[in-house]
Image (cartoon, rainbow, N blue to C red; front, side, top):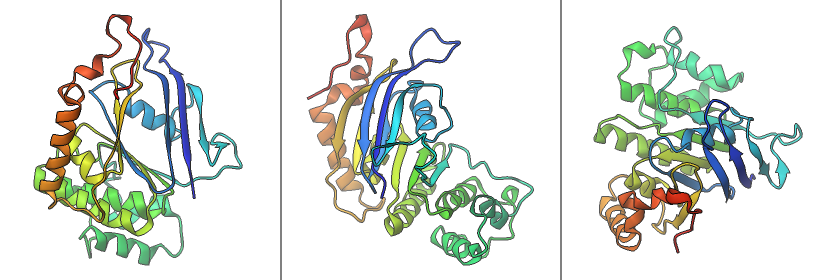
Length: 263
């Protein structure tokens, strides 16, 4: 069980005069799937790196079950899936997954995960012999191999063709449904976020803060075949908050105006 509380008071890079993230606060209860949505360059990856422990140079705090995540007595299994598969080309598929497991009982787990992403029998294959979509499937299996409590995903299906991306989204939902880790997912694609998420968090331009949270009420389990329902939710969002989806609401810091939540 992990309940995550995030408060970034200020994140400014030393070489950048402009604050990247300012007064950003939200919580994620155990097992929730949350998507972060915002324009390019606003600091979504920076925020994910902070949550993932890859960037400690910020003013703020992360808490797990009310305890500071920086404390050594707060262990949490975090897994990170990046925009690129980041597989070691000189290692086999099995060896790439074993890199993060380090568990003597990993063989059956690896076989099951590869089965879940329809890569049965590929344990001895090398990444360069796999298509881009297959490499992402390996990366997805690897992300779940440590049985994460917290899974961070930074646009993991970007640049894939639609059928391949949809298959990967379905694989993700299938595996996630089994163990329900907490997921924080970065995307530009609102429809993708609706398909996958329990909650959408829309981010402003720099300095980044939250301008809107939206609860997705679609029943689970879901998959990419439910496009009519997803489109219905998207159109509802578009009609209620056109300034968000048109991009206008992202400019809430223009003319020195403070950020405002959209009701």
